[in-house]
Length: 104
Image (cartoon, rainbow, N blue to C red; front, side, top):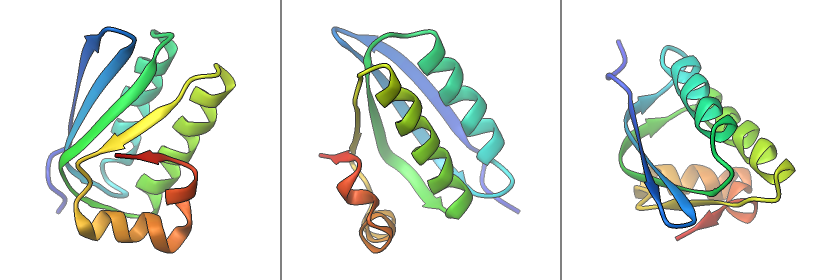
């Protein structure tokens, strides 16, 4: 059974800060997708996604991140990922996604 997933949003000057905690897997990815798409649709700002409390992500979760990246880029905006744990950062490196996202 997967861990509970929470997504919290805070407005900031020129950015939307998004805090993701828990695990993103086949069971929680649809919830993440719905929440992130709603945030993107209701804001015209760059996104800063804080992954400090994101403990696990699988391929479905990576797919959600890529989908959000495409949607944000269509609006000429950027996504910044911060505080990524080493195990998750390794997935971004292996898949080449580190070249698409701005990782702080």
